[in-house]
Image (tube, rainbow, N blue to C red):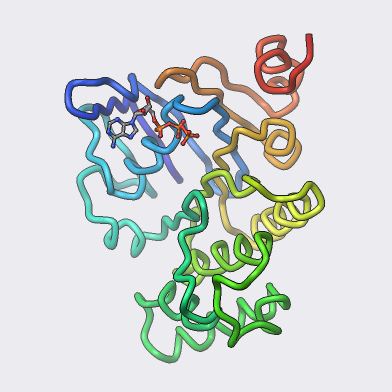
Length: 234
Ligand code: ATP
């Protein structure tokens, strides 16, 4: 579904990604772990078309997408749930979802909206409420639902657990598992290694712009380096 081959990226002359190679197969739930500043957000900007890599190739469903516009990438079926949710706080839940579905005609927009209300009853109950007045967990659900309005094949999430209580995080991860069972492939970018490894099949660990480890979720969870750096165990 997604394949990055030797992706390098810079801000000016400063290298941020160094020959990153990874892949996500159809139907998988894959996580990308890394501490602050490892380059995860930059990698996501490359995926969404917001930052042009200086070298390498991004293949999505068989075609190269590096250099394509964010809109073209969304239309091909790759949607992102951005860090910190980035909702329109003064618009209602329904209006935020409508904006998410802007690529559809009116009929498909209505159908997709109905599906989202079914999938997220909490949003149905709060359709007319302003997004900025929702709780943190509800805002995260809205941000996920807004990305799903594009009907993506691959959903990429940037730290959806950030700042949320453990129970809410569990609920969000359960939603991701359900979406995955219904056919959406998932790439989850997290600092929260414990939660991400619990919910994903496979993962990669990134440090200073490089992939330094990869393996099944179990292999990574048992790896000394991951235990020390991300799970706080000696
Ligand atoms: P976080 O989890 O804190 O968002 P991250 O792993 O997503 O971290 P990035 O945001 O990709 O990391 O940042 C990687 C490096 O690139 C950091 O050293 C950061 O300071 C630098 N960087 C990020 N954005 C820019 C920018 N617009 N201009 C210059 N340097 C940047």
